[in-house]
Length: 351
Picture 1 (cartoon, rainbow, N blue to C red):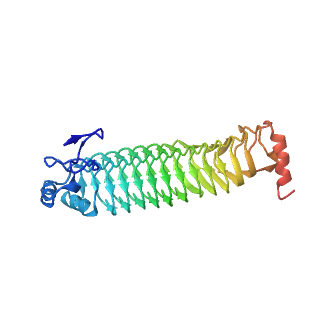
Picture 2: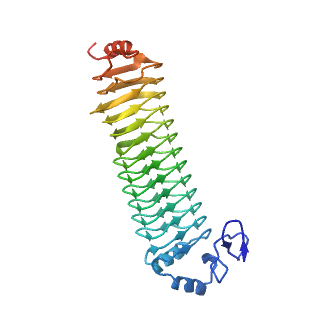
Picture 3: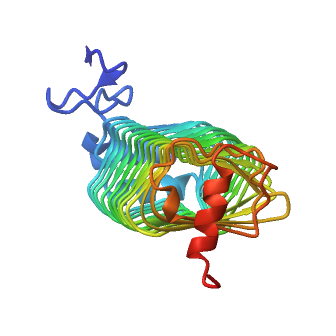
């Protein structure tokens, strides 16, 4: 048996196999003889810990483990594991912490309605095809940092009990977080959404962070509920971006949108400083909605409607003549307000 720098005793079958060795055999589960594997599986029971690090997990092997544990696993380690066939963890209960860091899924990976009682990590995991975590419940922290998903990713109806992190994740297919509930902070900093992404009716209990995210095909964050702060600072949308938020602050500084931008605010405030809007843009409000800054905005066509602009910065707007105000409240004499009122009247359909 050999101890390498991977952090566990590796399989003795060959130098190429770094699978976690099962004692007393000295080989990973994928390389046990049928009789040896029978002995291992026979000793499993609901709540047993499993260690399949760097192991090739066939569909048959996974099914045998889940059957023996009756779909209830304890501490589960799948770091660097390879799944050459469809991996189905639907309705499985993970009673302890779970790690799939660097795992490779070559076919469908389904965790529909699975329950994670502790923390779960998929750091730098690779999914060649579809990933489904529809309806999952995670009681602890969830980490999907730097994952790559080659096809659709489904998180609809999922519940994340603490923080959820998707930093620098790369989504190649359609992404759905519709109805997902994030109890703690959720971070999507630097994410790449290569196709459409939807957060319809998603709820964020704390921060919702999309700093420097890239929405290549646009996205729908409508309507979403954010407990504290929503940020798309430095984000980019290649097509339309639709956003509805209420009761929070919305950071749109340096946002770049190539298509249509639609922002609806209810009792919320937005900062658009330095935004670059290459398509028609509309920001509208209800209740105590307001915009705090338009400093340095570069827009093709921007309409502000039913907003409190009394504390808004209007300095260094690149094309003030493309700005239209409708039913907005202005301070008595904010800097630039006279020109804005003039351009608003000039562009109004009634003039």
